[in-house]
Length: 285
Image (cartoon, rainbow, N blue to C red; front, side, top):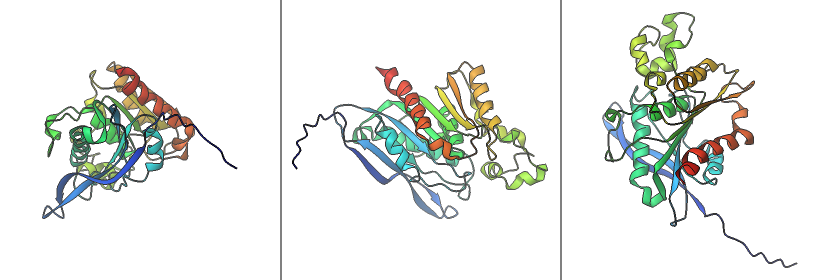
């Protein structure tokens, strides 16, 4: 049987480029250097520029895999975006602010190479889960040049929309059986000190500290049965942003636990795509 198709070309080819080095950082007790890498999905389309969304993997700041969610990120890309998943140093390599510096370095690299990947440098979004949700919020809220270190510092690391999933927003609000037991908690390893005993210093690494009226639009996604990052953390970030007059929505997944399968259902990703399309595509037309 023969069948002829007259195909109307409406979408570009999307290409995945893996392990792109975007920065070099100190490693092995500062004796050596290593590459930080990202995976990029971009359209083979030279006729226009596309908004870019940066994804940040979670893992308690102790472990991460930039390639773990590429199946879902590819669907996001095919909705009209360049998508990049960035690596950052974990807490066995260094404490805060290395992690935020790495994310900001990734954003600047993408802007510096916008022609190569057909990126609209004025329309960037950021999204991540758990520790990556925390870094999502920090990348969107912290506008301080001291965190922009390394290459391409002539470019801004500002973003125009943020979608953190179950983000730690105020690490001083976490509950521990005793203050001393907080010493081994992931948030204490991030700070380099016990967050329960050094609350003033701990507040300096909290997203809620950096909320201002100048923050970009947020959509926070959190399960109301989260046993790792309490749902109250997402509420705190939402309430602080709302009080500051920032456009913000808290999408509550009923019955969902931390990193629950619920977050990877079609309905949730449709909400994510709609949010970024509204803030990064429709808003610029």
